[in-house]
Image (cartoon, rainbow, N blue to C red):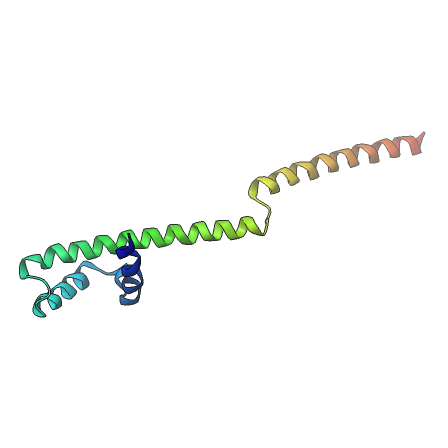
Amino acid sequence: MLKEKLERPFLIGAGLLSITHDKAKQLAEDLAEQGKVTRGEVNELADELVTRGAEERQAISKLVKDEVKSALQGIRLATKRDMTKLQAEIADLQAQLAALSMSQKSEDVS
């Protein structure tokens, strides 16, 4: 867990969150040339980098969505449900006003 938390800033900085398989393979081949991984591990490492990049993108997306949702709840904006309820109340009040207006006109005529 700690390892993943320490690696995330590196992955973000290295642009590995949106890495393509070709880029990942090139990175793995570079590491193989440096002797940090074996040639046999290149494809496996490339696949792992792409998979981890996708997982990190999803995790960051979820984190951002959760933070935005939390921030919006904190400032108490009207929800779609609130707006629908208000529209129904306005329509009801308009109907009542129209009925009163018609009643007033009929009293004025008499």
